[in-house]
Every structure is written in C-alpha cells, then in structure tokens.
Image 1 (spheres, one colour):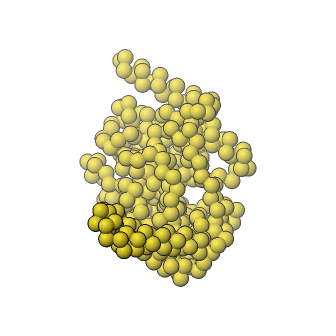
Image 2 (tube, rainbow, N blue to C red):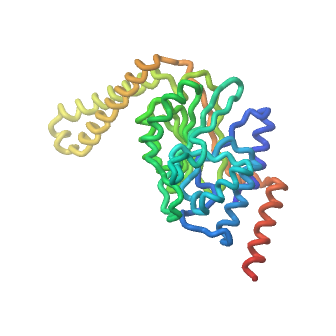
Image 3 (cartoon, helix red, strand yellow):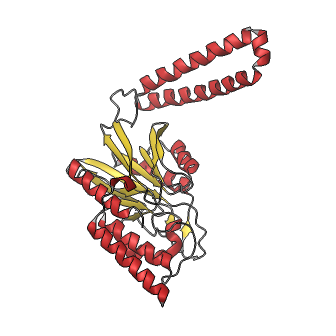
Length: 325
C-alpha cells in the first residue's frame, strides 16, 4: 500500500491544475506483489482488497487485469468491480467462453472518443475458473472495428514489454501503449512505429503523468522530420564505412567496428522503410500530437491524503490484530 496516499494527493493536485481534464488508468498488477494463490484470510488478500478500495476512490477510468491480480481469485475482482473498480481485459474468459470483464471501456473527453483496451498476461494460478487467450489474436479481432468508432485507442498491457511491442507491430490501430512489465521500472516514452509506449514502475514509488495535446495525428515527431534525422544518420554511417573500407590498414584493424556499423546500417534501413510505409498509409503530418511526460517521485512530495491514510492505518491495525490471535 506504499505510495497510495501520496498518489491520491498527487492526483488531486493534477485535477485542480487541469480543471478535471484527467484520465486515470493502470496497466495491471496493482493488487498483489507476485503471482500465487491467496485465500481470503491471508494478509495478502486483505491488503489487496484495501488497495482495490483505494483505487476505486481514486476514480480510475480503466484498470487492466494483470496475472498477479488473479491471485485472489475471480470473486475478489468481481466484487471490487461491483464496488466501482473498472477492470478491463480483452483476453480473460471464463470456462463458458464468455469475457469475465469488458474487453474495453470507451469514454468521451472534450468530444474525443477514447477506448481503453486491457490485455492480461499469463497466470500461474491453479484456480481453473478462467482462460487467458492469446492477446495478439484477440487484439487482431477487436481493434479494426474499435478503431472505426474511436479517436484514440490506448492499450493497457499487463504483458512483458517485448510482447506489448509485438502487439503494436501487428496492429496499426494502437495510439498509446502503457505497459505493466513487473521486471522493469519506469520506461521513458518511446515510439514503436507511430505508437507511443511507456510504463511507470510498480510498487507506488512514482506517479507517471502524460500530458497530450491531441489533434488526430500520431504522438511524437512528424515523419518528415524523423525521416530526415534517420537519413542523416544513415549517410554518416555510410561515410564512416567507406573511410574504413578504403583504407586497408584501418579495415584490418577495425573489423569489429565495421561489423557494428554494418549492423546499424541495416537497422536504419528497416526503420526508414517502416517510416516511409507509415507516411504512405496516413500521409505526412508535421502538426503531430504533442506530448509531455514526467515521473513524479511520490516519496519526495511529503504530502498524503487524510482519507487514504485512515483506510491504510485501519487495515494495518486489522492485520496486526489478526497476527496476535
């Protein structure tokens, strides 16, 4: 529960500063630190229920179901959903073949239609009351139709980062992907194709804040500017290779350097080809959607939320009393 009170205070400040123009999401795994099977009387289950209560109070717009979140069973998640926590998962199904939670949640902000799609990672739970389908296959079926009725598609992926990037490579419809890879910490936003990818480290140390000025164009820099940058880099590498190869003495002594430059050259060729393909498909848009990003260290704020403080203290008292029984 560390950092939740500071997070609540931070979110309230953002709400005040933006006039309430805020979207609050979580890409998954907020309830349990690790996969397992925790019965209702366990400390882990009680703590998870408290975290879910606090998340509901923080007015999340969508929370992806992570594999860790399944460690308390589906009943816990369904109960917290009934209490107002907006779980979302496109690939979590019950044994009857029906989705356990909505595959996506659509909301409208300032006349902008946003779809939040959740993907659940593989679980080691032995409960046997759910099936986790292949995320890539589910997204391939879901996103084309969803793209027609959405201005912006945000993927909340509780998968390893490389799998999340794989989803993006398979689908041109994802505008923003927020990952929840518990093997990694904060990930500074980067572009995969025309999709922006980022992650905030778990365990409540940071609050990730992404401010977007959306105009319908992909996030990041325009293709013309990026292509120019890549082509300049390609030209520089070519010049270095030519110098090395035309000087036999240098070439013999710098075989490893030549191999590295050749590898970089091939990678650039692929990046340039992908951007040129993207430019053909959606045209050059120099007026891109600008974004600003920061990670707020919650421990440094020194400010907490009284209501959340009370809930956390009460839970800690109950846990302490249970241990003395």
